[in-house]
Image 1: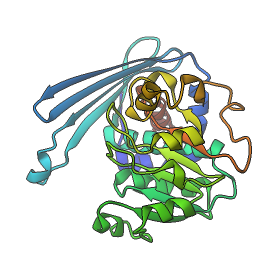
Image 2: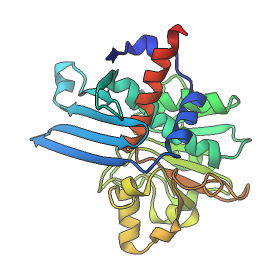
Image 3: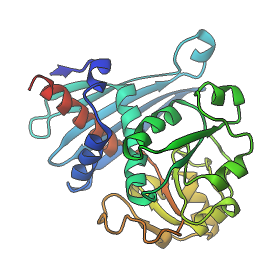
Image 4: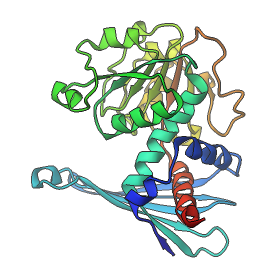
Length: 300
C-alpha cells in the first residue's frame, strides 16, 4: 500500500497529463458510482464510491463541519482510498484536497480544451475561492496568453487573489472570452442576455438541487455539455430546473465525456457553449489513479 505525500506528489503532476488520464478513463466501461450522505444538524459526512472495470475502485470520504470556521479550523476534512481492480487490495491513500483540486479544475479544463476558442485570452473568474485559484493554474497550462479578471460578491476576497478585479459583473461577462463560475449561488448570477458570440462558460459551483449560476436564457442560447449525464441531469439545479420548466430538454444536452470527442466540440467561432462540471466520483477515481501512478513512477 502506498501513502502519497501531497506536496511532493503535486510537483510530479501536469494538467496535460491529467487530461490524458481523463481521455483514457472515459474509453473504459461506464463507472458504477454511489454517494451516501449523513447529517447532524449543519454537519455532513459524504461517502462516495466509484468502480471502473479495468481501472480499479475508490472510496472518498469527507466531513463538512461549517462551525469549524469559528474555531479557526478547516471546514472540510477527508481521505481517498484506492483499491486494486482484480484483488480488491488497498493500493494507495491519496490526500483528499489534492484529489479534489485536480479533479475539479481538470474536469473544466478538459471542457475548455474542446469548447473554448483557441484564441481566447480574456478569462473571467466568477467567485474567488480555492477553485478559482486552481482554475488560473489550469487554464494557464493550455492558454499561455490568458489574462484573468475576478469578480466576487466580496471585493476583499477578489482582491486577495492578486488579479484585476471587476466591479460590474455584467460588463465583465460581456468582455470575456471564457467565463468560469465557481460560487455557492442558489439563484442565477449570470444572465443569458449578457452573453456574446463565441463565449465559453465553465460552470462549476452548483452541485446539488436548488443551486444555479446561470439563468434559463443562458441555457437556451448556448450549446450545452456536461461531464456525465448520469451525475448532472437529475441531480443539479443548473439542469434540473430548466428541464422541469421546459426551458430546455434532455435533447439539448449535446454530449458528455463518454461520447465521441468529435461530438463534444465547438462547431463555429460564433456559437456560445456551456459546460456543466458535475465532478462525479468516477472523475475522483481517474484523478487519484493518475496521481498514484505519477507517485510510483517518480523513481524511474
